[in-house]
Length: 213
Length: 177
Image (cartoon, rainbow over all chains, first blue to last red; front, top):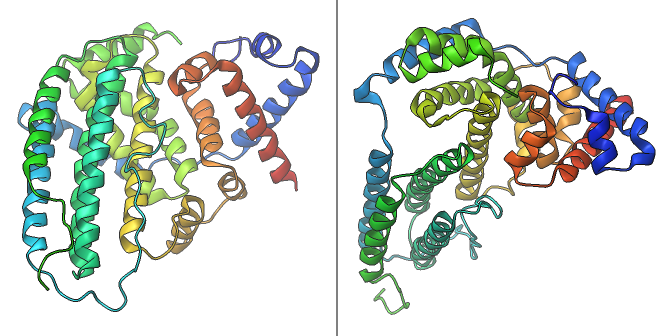
């Protein structure tokens, strides 16, 4: 058994080329030796003291961020995006000369990021991506028809906040799954997300280019 | 890896909200987690931030730890935090629209800016692809078994073994070259 509590030779024999076990062992050992010979810096004592102090403050009940609070925050940010988008579409100007002519956008979450088996979270991911696409498209339309870059930056910042909040929900789910626990708030999240989605879809974001300039 | 008795007691203390228990966890794991973040980002300032975030998350989520490998649980949180950082970085790049996001080169530039000495290993690590680099650091700093790492990454153990072997071999060649 090695420090990782396993017999590496057996693993290599079983899962890799049994004829070249020693070569694999030597390569792995040589690589790990290099890592050991080049230790990373240690965290600063002051940093650790600060972290400990922060934790003492953070673990008081008032400052504990609950799952429910995160969802409320996500919905609040989403609502602010909707309001800003509505206001923005009414303020069309000529586009700045140095504004990018074409903007590509894609899923805000990298492929494979949600590769777990939970169907509910996977469905959320799809819904979230759809909504993100729509919100980004709104901001793109606004840009195409004239808006300064700071507005776009604001959009992007808020999108990022929204995405991070929703992603944290996913993380929480993954950790629960990892420990075979039960994610009891998932149903609540689903209901609230569906409610948000319905409200969002009722808004008229399908900008057709017919706005008066 | 099983949780030994001392660690189990510390974790119980954490779940009960005892500051001393959290301090012990920090003392036990801060170096390894910091090394993990540093080798992935190459920047001490960012590593400071990520380490702080990790232990705040620990406080928030310790109640969700329900046994099994504590290192596996902790480094999963660390890995999620690192991915959050990467995504945040990527988003910032997109907003600025200055140039295509390239995490490796960006990271190298950042650490040069604050006058840090870049060790040879960090340079060679930055030449490896992100996934391989993260796998290598996860294995080295978490000290998890291949089985645990493969489970964490949701991939077959043979794939994890092959990737790690390839990465370490490439690193050795680069360091000698």
